[in-house]
Structures are given as C-alpha cells and as structure tokens.
Length: 460
Ligand SMILES: *Cc1c(COP(=O)(O)O)cnc(C)c1O
Image (cartoon, rainbow, N blue to C red; front, side, top):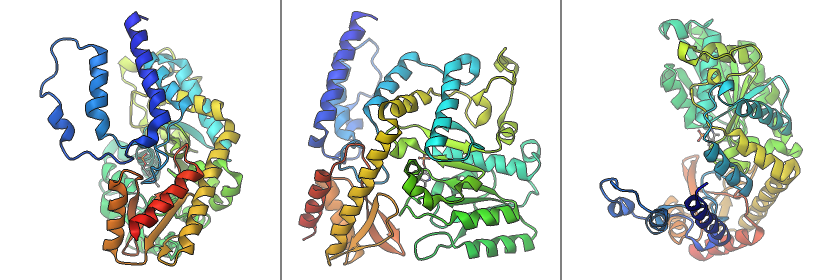
C-alpha cells in the first residue's frame, strides 16, 4: 500500500474513533434544511484529482451536518439500524477485497461463509434445520423472493413461462403488515387488489377467524389463495400475529406461509422470547434483518426457506457467459437463489459480529434493550398525564399524552428539533401515538433517564 493510503487511513481511523467517543455531542436528528447540501456542492465534478485531506475536510464541513446519527444512543425512532465495531471492521475488509460473489467460483469462501453463517443464525434463532438460507439486501427483497417462489409452486411453474394471465391468485396479510408486502404484490404482477388485508384484533394481531372467512369467500369466487404472511413484530407496534393459527390455515388451504420477522426476529436468540414464535418452524420462509437489531451494519437481511429446489427452479438462468467449471451439484451458486446477480460479501460482517460478541454477548445486549424499555414503560405508565397505547412485546414503547393529536405531534416535533433525541410516530386506532424504541447498540440506563426527563420538561 502506498504511503498516501496509509496516511489517509490513519486520518480516517482517528476520526472514526473520535466520532464513536463523542457521538452524544451531535444532534441526533440532522438539523439540515432542504437543499442545504445541494447549495454547497459544485454543479460539476472536478476535472483534476483532489487531495484526500480536502475531500475529507469537506465531508466534515458540508456532509456531516446533513447526517442523522443512527448510532446515537438516543436514536429511538423507526427501528434501529445497528452498527458495531466488528461490523465496521468487516465492512472495511469487504471493501478492500471488493469481492462480487455471484457464483461459487468468483470467491469460494464468500459462498461457503454465507452458507455456514446462515446455519449459525438458524441455530441461534432455534429454527428447524429444514431451512436453508441466504443473505439479501433487504426484507423487502426477501419477501418478494418468497412470493415469487410461492407463485411458481402454486402454478406448477407456469407463470415464469407464460405470465400471470388467468391465474386468479390471491394473497393475505393483516392490515398492520409491512408495506413491503404490498410492494411485492405489485412487483410480481399479482396486483394490489389481489392482496387481502385482514383486519386485526385489540392487540393489532391478525384476526385469523376472518382470514379463514376471506379465504373461503375467495375460493367460492373461483380464485386461488396461494400465500399468507404472518408478522412476528409489526413495524407500527411490534404486534405478533398468531402464527399457530395461521400455520393451521396455511396447511388446510395449501398456502405458502411466510413469516415477516424483519425486526423482532433477532429476539429469537433469546430462548425466553421463543414462546411468542410457536409454530414458526411451520413456515415455508422467514425473513429476519440482522441489520436492524443484531449489531450488523446495513445491509444484511437473512432469508430462510425450506423448499430450496423450488427457489432455484424459480430463479436460475444460465447464459453461456456465466457457465463455470463450478456448475456442479457440489457447489452452491447464490446467483440462482434470488433476484440479483451480483452479490456483496455480507457474510463477513455476520462472521465478525458473531465471533466478536458470541451468542451470549448478543443476548446480553438484547436483554438490556428489553429491560430498559420495560423500565421506561413503567415510568410512563405511572404518570397519569400519559398513556401506554400498545402491548409491548419487545423494546418498543408506544405512548401518548392524554391530550389531542396536535399536542402529541407538537411534543414530538419539539423533542426532535432539540437534537437531544429522535422519535417517530404511528397511528393506532386513528390516534397519533409516539414510538420510542430502546435499541441502539450502546444505549444505557442513563440515556433512558435523561430522555424521560427531557420528555417531561418538553411536555409541561
Ligand atoms: C423494516 C421492516 C421491513 C422492511 O425491511 P427492509 O429490509 O428495509 O426492506 C419489513 N417488515 C417489517 C416488519 C419491518 O419492520
């Protein structure tokens, strides 16, 4: 490596360490106004080479103010997108190697590490060894993949050949299910109208009695139910659908059963949480995002599927220029397992994270998050001016001031623009509700105490 590269690397690593140490001094939510950065950037690219110091100085001066600090311990919005030191180091190696792991032959270790990491995760989550796995960029891609394999299996692989016309397929999820399912329905040519949104009960879980009614009504109409999604942790409130009952209906009506555990699936590393996921092994496919709550930098979405032969039959295409001497039964070519051809070497991140923390280390972090969210929930519940608005299954607390929607929206805005914390909101039964997720890798009890004090002083 050249002297320049070493010097630049040192500059960067000093900055990275300083950032990690001082992250609490940054406003959590970027205070940038629209077009702030666009106004500062030249309209055209430089013709001549620029020194790294200059580019890096401009990164700090112009770009950093437009960054929201997802790794700030008081990032409580949406769901976390956790980073961690081993994951950062792995990302640097991944970029250094610059591997494109589409086929086994393009880097045997990239494929084989991915196979073994998915087996490690499968065991860590307590899932059946009937599942095979691969890493995708997002839960959205994983769910779409599941829907395509289900479509092909339900139509004896004719849609891939002849298109969707005349198939009359219908799919099901709850009204609380993630928008990625609707997006997949659109992308695969199913059509949004052929995705039934089943109503939910008091706890925002799918009404499986109504699921069965919907299925029966569709069959009576001559339609062909083929796919159902159960949520293990919805995005709005982390509600958990009754996977037991969905599994029974999926079997009765021969539907593909997909479990969307994108966020909360990481909690399956805790044996005490697995009671919530009974029958998850009855699923045909499951998606869990380690890039949310398992200290693995975005992107890393774990997709588990039982019928890998149908998966490969749905996706494999082999033009002459991709044929390799490695195309034997002996090796896996992940290019045939999903929508993309090129593949990042994401398994290295999982390897570094799992080696560095061990399962016990990760369990400790998730238990801390859940414990802290319990504490916060108890403080909020004890204050008569607030109410808890949804059952807390994991580390998300949904609450509101006992006041108008406007008062709650104002409170959220005030807290977010203070830069002291970042919260998001949802609607539950038509009411504006504040969401607070205690899930950043390093969040400690002090952060939660400070946050509660700040919420109180902003509110009253
Ligand atoms: C975050 C989330 C998704 C989407 O995840 P991406 O990886 O961003 O596509 C899907 N389902 C649930 C339940 C989620 O929480």
